[in-house]
Amino acid sequence: MAIQAVRGVKDILPEDMPKWHYVERIARRVLETHGYQEIRTPIFEKTALFTRGIGETTDIVEKEMYTFADKGGEMLTLRPEATAAIARAYTEHKLYFPPGVFKVYCIGPMFRYERPQAGRYRQFYQIDAEALGSSSPYIDAEIIVMLITLLHELGLEQLALHLNTLGDAQCRPLYREELRRFLGAHLSRLCPDCQGRYERNPLRILDCKNPQCQQILTTAPTVQDYLCPACRQHFETVLQLLTAVDVPYVLDARLVRGLDYYTRTTFEILAPGLGAQNAVVGGGRYDGLVEAIGGPSTPGIGFAIGMERLIALLEEKGVVFPSPQPMVFLAALGEQAQTKAFQLVCTLRRLGIAIEMEYEPKSLKSQLRRANKLGVRYTLILGEDELSSGKIVIKEMQGEGQERIDLSQVVPFLQQKLALV
Ligand code: AMP
Image (cartoon, rainbow, N blue to C red; front, side):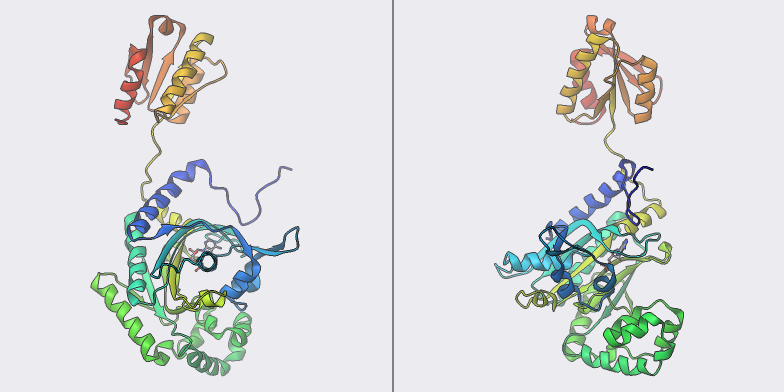
């Protein structure tokens, strides 16, 4: 039997590429307009980066990492997310010089050993943006506004921005204890996962999807009541700034992120249309991360957009994706014409015109069939007759139009028709 792709991973076929290019093109434009530059970190890192940076008690580290020993015995992990790797690069290359905010984005695949289902894969793509070096609430607002602008530019205006604050190292431990005390009284009714989380990471219980856990949580204390004055002030400023630039939000006291390094502002974009896997974007502040992986104490904030889910939403909304540059086909008849056609094809391609020809001798009918299949706008026909008279036939594929023009006129003709000049 032929070997198939691994469970939970997907090929992105050429026919789907216009969607991915559309998203990537707009993302680059919007992110760069906001001063974020691209960074590419390796696909794999030392395992310790993620165990330290993401946290031992998170689902990612406990259950989902693709970890292996390489031939030298070093423990490596395929990156499950980009933030820890960017923080590592920031520290390693001392990107905190010159002082100021370091703003980057990264587009690429992530790997998590999760149970595959619609919208959840083991290799998936993210657009990730991070700002390191500032604890100003303006940066929180900037990155959220940038995200909303990007979604609008893509044609997605109606998505709900859910927002919360998690407090910081000062006030979160108090809340954690209070939450644990509350949950302790209901321990036997929590789902088995949450019973495990109760000891290791009680905050994670807040976003459990189990209906009985949700029911118990309706009366749980919220972090809002435990915020220290600095965290409260920070959050209020973020909310004021978002209001000042007309970005609506939904306050969601139960929104916690799976990763340990999150502090203060945390947010998600939810899309009801996506079913169970309805989170399209997750993000937040992580003021403890850089230090946790051995760098200088550095505040940071970022988000990650899941590209498969984003594209599913665009499809559902009926967004029209721009098609690639129209193509031309050159049908050659006879050996001599074939050589001349090859020269012409090479010249046209050098000039940026997308053109195809058949290298095996084929009848005109079969070549026109191929041209139709490619969906080309024009087919050039070069036979022995045309060759001896220095002419070429140009056939318009949508409609009946067909004309003979001088071979020397092919380039300007196509450049004009394809609006390349
Ligand atoms: P996270 O890094 O967990 O905050 O995830 C950020 C975004 O990445 C989510 O909102 C999803 O859109 C996407 N995502 C996370 N895990 C997966 C997965 N296994 N398959 C597809 N998309 C995912």
